[in-house]
Image: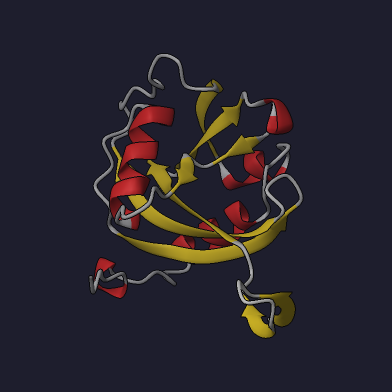
Length: 165
């Protein structure tokens, strides 16, 4: 954090704390048998890159609800969240902010059909092995970390995410 100096409405100089800009995102690492579901992004600044179904947490929205909403929109999956696969953060040049991503874990049966909602900016959905995912153009490297957490039972129950409002 840093301090900024500005003039207030009376013309006096005041020094105050400048809080960093954060962008909150929720997503779901979906396990389909031994594979993991990814979506191929269609938005211009990330077109063609692969990601887990994820998106912005809207103001006042519970991160678990945001994760479920984004998963339904982007992959056509009604996710039953089983746990927390990790919390990851990185700087985004596009947003000019630090992005904090809360990643939940869910499983779906092998015969589950993946289908994004109409109008979503998703080019393709698919389920891939960890080795196949390593070969893809990933939007962010945390996807592999989330997979590692799930494979090594380093996940937390949903009680780790609480709303105290």
